[in-house]
Length: 111
Image 1 (tube, helix red, strand yellow):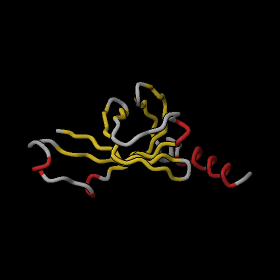
Image 2 (cartoon, helix red, strand yellow; image 1 turned 60 degrees about the vertical axis):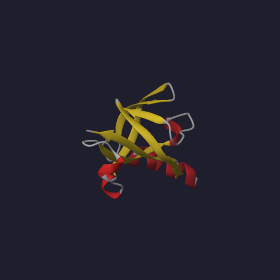
Image 3 (tube, one colour; image 1 turned 180 degrees about the vertical axis):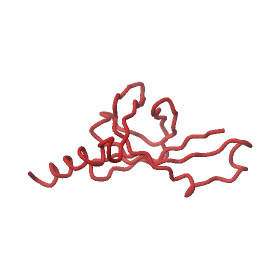
Image 4 (spheres, one colour; image 1 turned 30 degrees about the vertical axis):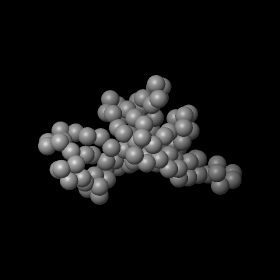
């Protein structure tokens, strides 16, 4: 087994495992539906809060990082597009790749 195979095995058995870190979601992106996608979502809102003057009163910004195995969504994910994860619509603010994972910074405005 080479390094890439070992890494893919670790991602599937630990990082993408619902009993460990990931939860399974339905993802809507670019008119396509992807079922049972293992995603790790982490809240980073406290690091990127906007002032009240940047949003209407009573509207709050929630920013999360999403870690998705790149092979689970067979499309190029692009910045400034919309992705819906289990009926929550997010704006994609940043996209990067790390060790077979697509790392997204997502923003949703909430009341």
